[in-house]
Length: 306
Image (cartoon, rainbow, N blue to C red; front, side, top):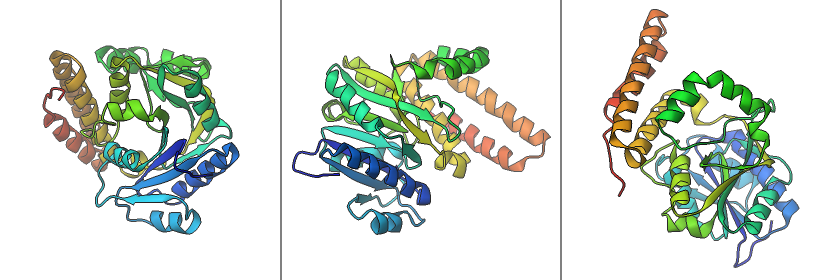
């Protein structure tokens, strides 16, 4: 990994209590950048972790720059903080619980350098067992919510496993688990919308990029392994509330007002039913989680884009 006044790549890792998974992510990233031998920097933006994350970084990766935020500000705000402190022509945003397969970053950079009409490129995301995770998709709307998630769930699950993830394609959005974006369009749009605390900020960014005429690419020959050790498994209540609030915010900003209200009604029915099932099974933990999710959904108001 080399550094000069003109940094080619800035890798920005968003961390909250990542611990040993953060260490694994950094080891993978450092090895990959050393193989590329390009001018680069690594930044870890820490969302007020309470574990040993920062001591692990300072002990094992002294060249990594750490930006410590005073409180957990969420993914979007942390990512923007890292971007503002960076110098690279390309910004590589990464979760703190991933491992990069050799050669993947080079393939992502090569794609953007060869295709100036693309602003963003993202790798395939694999689980530890080698299965493909859904890491891209169509615009978020009622069709994608009802058809892709319910009526055709089994069909699309089969399609994803057999074919879809293995073919390079233009996409409407790509997951913030790992994505590479050009610096200029990212800052021209103001970065990630910080009204999203966690989740859906990547879909929002994809939509705004495409409205400016840019294209986004899914590149499956670049791959990362996602260990899912972060928020969703450790903090299920926080993750579920953030995901639903983010989804409603996206609809409020980018879809017809009626779509927002239909989605809100659908989510209330869905989680009240789940709460009822939790009550029947005497699962008090899930019952409390669903009660908090319902409260958050009810409190989501329709907004307009600023």
